[in-house]
Image 1 (spheres, rainbow, N blue to C red):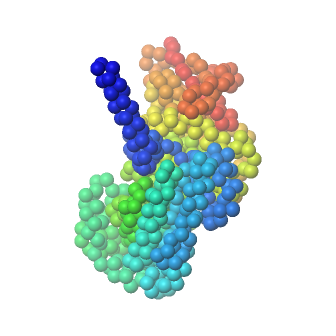
Image 2 (image 1 turned 120 degrees about the horizontal axis):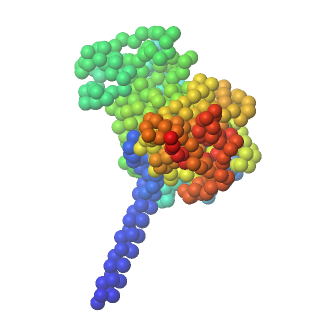
Image 3 (image 1 turned 90 degrees about the horizontal axis):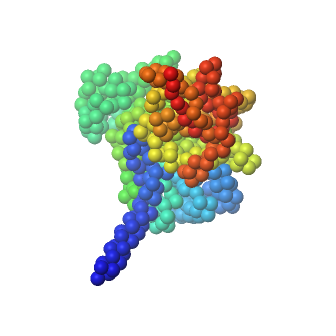
Length: 566
Ligand code: DGJ
């Protein structure tokens, strides 16, 4: 009898374990908070997307993509960002063709890659170029935005209810199809539309838009503002407070009349128009997103074309797009959208990250530049901004990765090192025990407190020449980056590129002096530390003259333990 109950108990435990692991396997990807980080959970575990985005047209040909999938895997990517377009998904109204999406799934699975899918539909880079012919040509049913002079723009009006419903219907069909075919969750998230916002006009001046602009600010926005008054993004709080926190009135009455200040690009010229456009983009895309999520509920986000010094006001950059200064408006009007993400081709990477890393916005970089500088920025962003993924654009082109083997490619090398320790990184994100380092000509020195020590970082020149990043029009300089994780009271691990990382005691206390107990270079293989050289002498900073810490010429992972004495 005893044995029977033992067997039964054993069987029960087996059932529970298999049920829970099966449950873990079948859970759809979702977002989860850990401290002040938000992580993507895949198959029940946090997942770091070491990604790259394909060129816009690559996926439209199966043959073109065939050699690219294995190349992406060979370059140590674990995720590819790939577009599906409305024009190919619904070439005839109501008739769907998922060939493109099925091919993406097939190619990715064969190379053991995950996918972040982009829905190129009503808008791409501000314009409306990816909708099917039957939408493009029916400008009465699917109205265009209009500029101040009354000219139609090649941009769908956000006020077009028929457009919104048609886009949402196609997107819902796509998500329904993905639910049916993607049983092992290759698709992790969806980017809905691409870099939306109005261009060549500060706002939409179509009759419907004018009516809305001079009508009452909608109640859902007013309710959101009132409820979140003390937590609003400061830029928005400022204009609303200047206008007396009005809860009734048209857009200019509630948020003020705009002004032009071309000299100071960070000022909010045409901010009211931007807020107005943001509300209507978020309403439209929020609806499309919600309809898609009804079919298949995975994380969905929007990406932003950034405001830049020479694009100071809405209309010069895509106005109303998912930018930090209108983050609250997007949340109010499009609550189904999980987060806003920056496409970073702008030199001040730190500033962009700080702008988006506000108000609990989950951090992901869907587009940026790769190469050695990109790799340094990724390491910094992993430690300082808890990103859940990083993705240089045009990854299948020659501008992001060298044609040589993975070992000679800075981004591929970095992805390999990060992959091995992704469990450790994810364990520390959001808890204050991981920090990012980024030093360059602008900020040549960084220092911060971590545990009982002050960490100091500056570049260690490797003699690399400055390079111009092709294709992105962005002048690159030598950038050194990394992150540091505190493993114990006196123990740290650093993944760094061209860095000096030195330590000094936070408070002298009874033991005011420090020395290096040991430094080991090594790698993590599936989360396990595999030491290489023991570093000492010339390979460390171990004198009163040069300080105490690590010399990281090129890229390496180094573990350091310190000791104190008097
Ligand atoms: C940003 C867009 O989002 C991408 O689709 C692509 O057009 C790149 N710009 C090109 O640099």
